[in-house]
View 1 (spheres, rainbow, N blue to C red):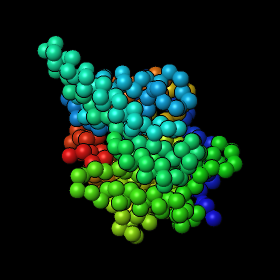
View 2 (view 1 turned 45 degrees about the horizontal axis):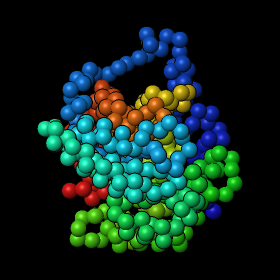
View 3 (view 1 turned 30 degrees about the horizontal axis):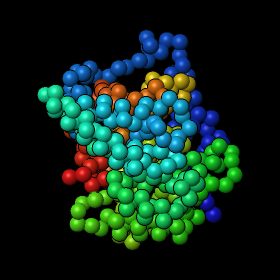
View 4 (view 1 turned 45 degrees about the vertical axis):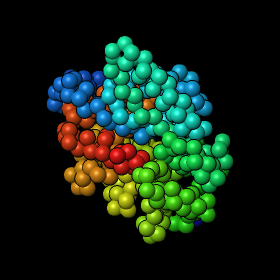
Length: 353
């Protein structure tokens, strides 16, 4: 029997699992800019520029790939801007096809650009570019053969569980069917095989690693995976994607349980703060900021990851990073903790020394 607490809560909670009617009334108040707006502490732009150097984004999107959103920022342009900003590495995600082939081509182009810049007497350090594959129906769903093949091509740093075709997402949209990775606490055989493939891959002497990203499966399925990995002692790191986006949101209690089971909770720019082009989408801003600070205080930053999930039309990843970092600092998140969450933890997850 597949339980889903979020689906049950959405039947009765009109504004999602954490946003209340009182909060929405405040956020739509006619005097909000004059009564409620609190920009936090001032942050020098030069400080944001400094912290940008060396960050690693484990979750971004770009064109041209197989996603449905026209007008995404091009992957190549994003990589050039990231290089100029001093960003260390990017991991591109697509819902319909793998991205590490594109990453390989872009990396080669960046090296050529570096040579051109050096010939002109200019410095240019290419961002490291990686990808992975999302296990939707377009690649065969929970397809162990696809995972094995993807890992064999190099630059594959993440395997994402289903997104658009996840049973959890389809149920939330009122659709039948979809892919599930666990029935109750029991993982389906394909999920177990994928975990075994990842654990075997991570057991190497080169330091190469590939993380499992939980993507859009239900929180109950995520916990089942984490418990299985812990029980078996497997060397597989699990990222809980955009953990304050409503579809995949976790409560503080769920977040702490997942951390205790070894998970890495990912906080993304596009579901934590407002961004250009988001139109009328509502993000849980206060909840996101408060949860980050609560988890740092109680659990430390070592199992928290900052990313953008940017690359939507109107949301360029490099610009998104800049504003995300500024707002985090303005809301009281320490620079030292940001460096852990944006640099050290993602480096560990994808095997960058």
